[in-house]
Image (cartoon, rainbow, N blue to C red; front, side, top):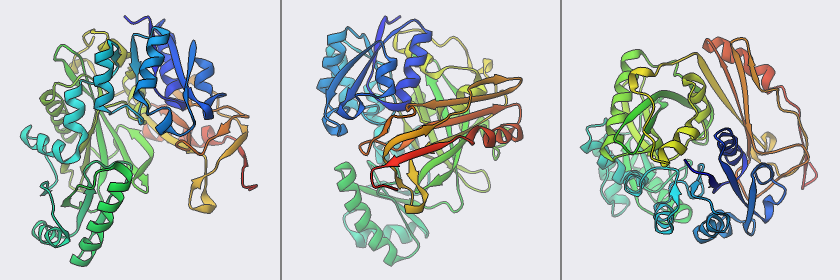
Length: 424
């Protein structure tokens, strides 16, 4: 097992990884930018290394500086968290070249699943259900219209390298396809440096349901059931729960089998998520695979009793999974509420400045109810304009969905106050 790991991230996910490493007796190294000089993750770690200015492109995304920090501190492995370099194949390759373990999947799996067009082609070969669509290169708006009419309206235009809702447009007519094709390509180019888009059938009133998978380096892969992530704002998740209130046992089993089949097809190791959209008749279609730890992983941990970060670390160290699919079952219900520093009166724009009042609920288990708060902030800390405004994930767990929901209200009754820079 590793003696020391570096966390190539910040905020709540860095704090969350540090907690598990500490529980495992592993020392931790944090990295921090100018903006995070007083950050909680820096204070929690055993060591901390400064890696550059506040903009992520000059600090958290600079591969060489992350590797230099690991070498300087003797870290044997790096956990990337989510975002930043977590799905960057070049980062995983650079770590291998430097003799540092990557606490994540192999480079081939990252590459295969990192491109939305290629991942769908891969899913088709693995006999995973996919949304009807066209995955080839689309030359111009006229060709896009012809493709859309062949698929049948409505259609969704998506950026191949997309994420976070960027580069996505719904079109219900030829005119909307023309406009959406142009704007999607432009947004994709500016956001991802890749203007390729594809077109697929838009599923009306879909559910967004994902399957957590976990594999080791010995060919063992299991699924840890599903998460329902249908409550979203601007194509970004806000509330997640496990299990899904919509799935029946047969659909759950079928989705789990297909997720495992896809993971096996790319020799997947570590934790990953296969995302599906599900129509009102419970037909499900592959959306994408995220080759990293998801923001919403705590709900899966609470219904399975597993620590996913611990499993990722053990897998990276070469240990086999200590359980089989038949050993796993769903225990109770968990719901996660993302807490953002945003201003609802200004279209939910990030609200930056000093967090002058922050009173999170008491964590722990009382009877059969559990409250968990994954956070990376503290009262008096700064909410920076350089990073995502999510400051906490409040998770409740109970024996039933009703019990988990009932616990959310009191737990979310926290006092939050900001001394925003604009004076509001």
